Image (spheres, rainbow, N blue to C red):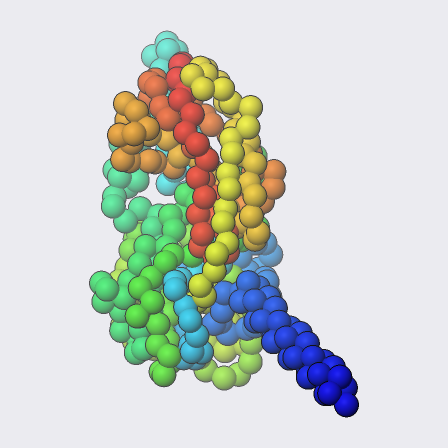
Length: 376
């Protein structure tokens, strides 16, 4: 009898042990696999597939006189460590920059011609004179030097008002994929992409609505023909989106024109505690290598849900003193993570080079620094 009781209690203890460990394993799995919480007008971010890649643009541009607002619900409670605002944008035009490059090419082609032929050629290129090319170059350079040139801002508040503390620089037109041109071969053309900026977690409301707005202070972004396009998804008849056409480069000041049927690709991302890591290594570039022409720099990236990779350079004397790293080249949004380093866009000098990768949680990893020498 005593032996039977002892066996019974051993079985109970073993069962309890297995049960507790089962729950612990389940909790551990749940904790490790927790995904960032997305708050948007549609559940799936991939459903924001309208307007911003190709086809009809719906006049959904982001510009100086075209600010968008959406009302999102209060955030669910959770153990969050970071918050982001995001927008899906595409079909950038870069009109000013492309006009400048074209004018500079015209100037270089004509400058060494005899005067009479130079003037005739300038008129054939739709200039009044060769001198006008120089004037146009200066005017375009002045536009590009504006602190607002090509910039897109995003904001959040529990009411439709956005001051400085509620407004954040999101992305430059330079980083938004270009719209294709049926008459011109263009690099950097691609599908619309999500861009995110980290914001103070305290700005996200958990008990009220969250009003998210997007706009541009650049007065040159004034139509769909010259501005980037905000992506959209199919929605319903409920009014939760507005278009402000009188903001004049500032955050929207009123919910003046309601929009239905389509939902703007504006979202909040809340990141829970996680222990994910991103590891980056530059391949096939030796320390001290001379870069004299365009060179593809490839990075090996380890980690889950990598959303973008880029290159950074520093011209400080040593990596120990390196304080300012500047991005160079385009963003790589998917494997292979190869980015072209163009020496013509850098001063002839020695630099330290590194690759950087970011995952969907906002975790960032850096490669080791490699010294390179740019020669022309």
